[in-house]
Length: 402
Length: 187
Image (tube, rainbow over all chains, first blue to last red; front, top):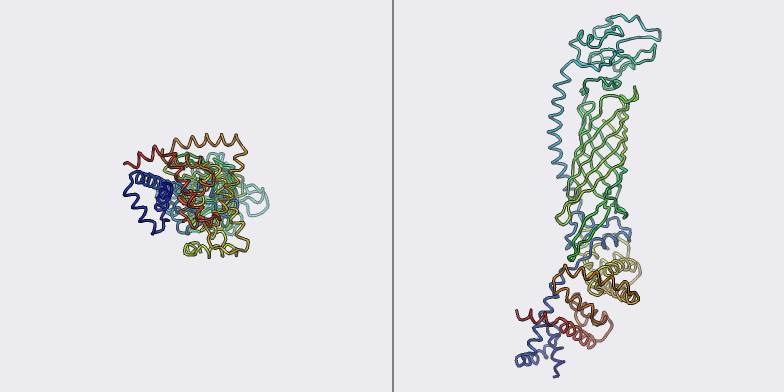
């Protein structure tokens, strides 16, 4: 056979395509010819080199995202099992447990930390305030006028109308009042119908409880704000649970100019369950879903590439919520609040959220509406590097208290 | 449903996709199975990463669109590669008409080469210098693992033609790379 035919047979043999009846001829030629043996070695080396090259080609994540986005699929996250980039935000074939296990882990850690922090903080509040004689004192004090009719106020003399209600002069110093009632543990206000002006009176806790039906009584935590208020009041109430739902409208930093990859179901929403044993302190668990802009670097085929995406991410965390015990305006039940949330997300890193705003909760109403600002800080990892995303925006929602 | 799809054959998956049942999950399963092969094909065929990505993306989008048409699917990866091949050839035609783009891509390649191992880069470079019909058949054989018979069916050419083209492609590559290969083969 011609030289060219032997070279072709070598290639066919290495490809497993040489018919068996031609193999004997090829081996005979090879055993006799050094040049052909070298040729075979070279082709073998080439084939081996190519086989090592096979492992390095996987479609880039951005291409996967583009395809899924173009087809209108809810998830644009990579699903290639052999892919190593962004293994932590795969969604396509990921089970619910895989989605929530990281948020739950971070939530558990946060819960433990928050529990101990809350325990010590509240413990110190309770010992320092509830057990002492307390009052919200306005300076100059305008307290203690009672009127049972629309007539003019009675003379502002100190009059004891019952064991628990005492009328004192309008200009009496609150400190004196307190000194005269060392056994009182709490105070409230009584509305003066005659002048329709909110005036104060000292009431024991028992009196407040006995007069719950009276529209004259204003709960202690609803006292008007005074810049001279010496203490925040953490009055005890019955245990309560609340279910919270809120909408998140925020801007992401970085904010890549790519469409957000919405997962199935609602997004930009958070659901929570809160527990409270105090009137203005509560804590709970929140689970949410919202898009986070991400900008990170990937090394693919030896080239460093910058990626941008906006995946919708599940998160969960433990929240500590504090409502300041005073109204911004008299009797309108508008009170400022702050919330701190710590948890985790399905992209593996911790998530921190801080909220502050205004809460509207009429007395004795199970509904609690709020509007505020929210800041978020999400950490995530890709190819061994840590990145973060910040979000800032509005949040509003309601909590139903049981 | 998602996890069960791994057990389905290509034929069954395409049937589900055609019927529009769980199409998102079915498509993703097909993507999971063959995206690597298709991307490697595009990457090797076109040499340039950006072009390969474009063609790769278009391939799967066109595949999804064409899955809505009534057809009997006998070889899903070959079907995908056929779409990719047509798009690659189109891309090469466009590239020939654009000198500036070609120059730009060369620069891109030059940047990538620095990062990769020497021999693999040489193979890739040598591959891009092969005529299209030889490069294509080499990729199908070496990177797609197709048999000669499958290549013949895929390209619609005779077996003897396949053998000759593969021989020419490999010989050409060996000649280009000989200084390196002969050194390596002695190790």
